[in-house]
Amino acid sequence: MPYFLYKGAKLKQDESQKRTGQSPADEPKIFYIDKGQGKQVLFFIHGWYQNARDAFGYYIDAFSSEYRIIAPTLPGHGQSYKDPRYEYTLEEAYKAMEQLLNKVQEESSDITLIGHSMGGFLAMKLALLNPGKIQNLVLISPIGDFRPYEKELKKMLNAPLPLLKLTFFFRALFDKYPFGDRKQIYDENMGHRIPSRITHYKIKMRNHPLYAALGYMRSFLGTAIDPLVKHYHGPALFIYGENDKLTPPSLAPAIATNMPRSIFRVIPSAGHNVHLTRKEEVFSLMRHFLEEHQAKQSFFKRLFKRKK
Image 1 (cartoon, one colour):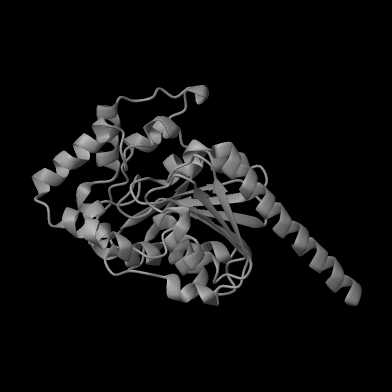
Image 2 (cartoon, rainbow, N blue to C red):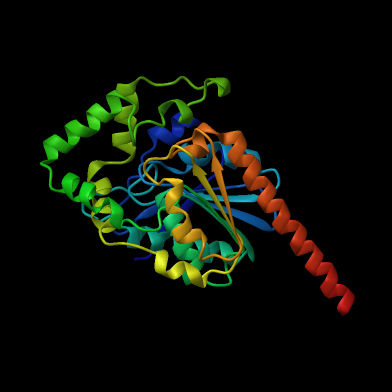
């Protein structure tokens, strides 16, 4: 399915929550942030039940003075299209990201994919199925295999819809996943007013409707990318939170050991949303990784010129 891509750059927090990106059936819209300039592109892919600005707002602003930032919002999330007539799946999300990647690749040959959780899965798949287009991978709490979650997924998918809605509501009341990012998305130091748990629940449910969330969950069943990662030979940085119960660091070796140029980092006392709770540390790791890549590129360019 082709997607109509539309972009923005300077979104205020309240605007990103108010605009839902609803679109006609014949023109599914994928919203993406395009900010900054430069030959090097950082392509951010957020995880399930977040959106581009919520997940990566800090990094978009911090990196945009040196890099061009592309940060799409996945189908069924945030400002991208949401329509109960569609089936929201990992495959459709992948197609949308691949279309945008191809568009960006026409303008830049130096692209780093940065993905969190489900976005890490999509980033790995893009790198594996589009060899030569991706120079680096940064994977934050990535999921490479959804099969360990099948029991819990089936339990949720088989639950009556009213019960599932009630479960989500109670999880929001106690700031549990996927509503536990309330105090990280909204930062008082940046002038944000942190919403109440109920308000945050309403925002999340409006920006990420249940029919889209369920569509993704159905597509998770039996899905794994671990066997393919051995075909990726580029640099990769893995970042995990030490206390991540959803994608614990113990899962990393199944992916990282098959990538010969991978770097593995664990941030102490951090959880699944380590990119939100420990922004400065994650930013520092990413910056160092990218600067090393840039230095190696410059070295090989100089070496090639000498040989010529």
